[in-house]
Image (cartoon, rainbow, N blue to C red):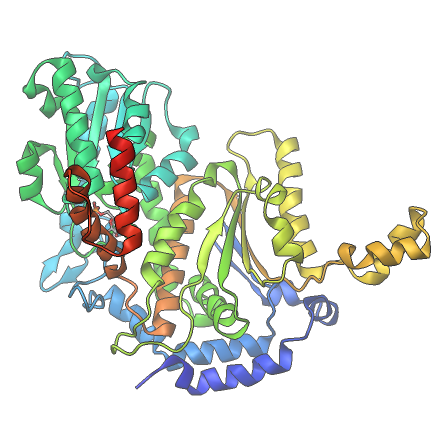
Length: 548
Ligand code: F6P
């Protein structure tokens, strides 16, 4: 049975790692003029350059051997044929089916899933048109001007990221807002700027039981009913997206105002489903379809391309290379696009909730590291914040640079300055700055030899810091859909190599359950003795200060 660190390929990679770990990328580039051609893949409007990684052709060959030994191709086939690969929750993993064109059947257990998917898409299309045209109005017959998505995790991060990224496609007469946090400040900050007569709430929750979402939804309902002075206003001002029809009905939202999706879609993979209705309301249904088309293009690429020409496969294998051989413990996501401000946040849930696991699919506690920490921020803001550590710190942090040739807000001249930073940073990370060059510069600036010796080590950049460059022609719904899908499949590849279940999330349960119990402790008068001394101490201090 396959186990990552016991595989033949792992052992060969370990030997290979020892052979090449001290080789500098500078030298790899010097000795091979074709490195960029060898280590880059073009996919439609996307150029993926992975030449600035600490790899040789042999590395890729061995990583592909590892993928074979882990049965990656079979596992890809398994996902795309609707096998129950989410074994702990006994579910299929079929978010990819949400972006299949209408004329392409996806048959599972004799049922054509595409038909169900497109029935919901058509319902979304109809509703979006009604809201945007003013046919669906508020209770007092005013046009909807503001849409508030109430949801958390996958029911918030994906749609929020896309709405922000494609903001340039949203017309002025509609605004889309997101409320996720149960901190009452979050909803209050939105409500104080909104007019109840023209606000539509989308209650987005796969389970329709999530505490944060349900509490915010109840408060929003109270706000509408109080301000519009009628419980009947709920039907004009609330819709729901969920897999839980019963829960939606009990909340008081009629079935015709509910948009369905299915158990085979994980929360963090759900922006393609009706969970994306806030996106469609903002950018329009036609653009939403383009987002789906871009993701579908990547699905086809992932399913059909040979492993060594397959972008998500190469991305995922490089993650293994750095995590399990170089000992890297994080990956920085660095979009050179203000529009992608929320992209690192979306990827945090996508990758860490998927692969932050410690037990294999065969129930074995692993003896190797799994998911690295995902973090990041848009360039050039990041440059003036944490890049110092990436360049000269003690940890190896592989980076993804993501940028676009054209800027949706035009201004070519300034965009060139922005992108020059992208290219410069990847080069600086790769090459570094050697002692000799620093000395030369310091001499030219008039420093004495003694002065130079004092400052020299601080000015040297070791380089040899790896990065991927993802350069996309233009930011459009299509290319954004493709980009997100690349990361979804990269996440799947990591999980296949580690042989973990990337599609459950039991780890978020414990805190949730405990919080429910603690709420009661906060509302009673008695001193709390139910927990450890720290938790009791914090709870009792909170109660004391609250009482005044
Ligand atoms: O944080 C755990 C989680 O279950 C996520 O996987 C999910 O995206 C989020 O909560 C929200 O869940 P729901 O859509 O059911 O409200």
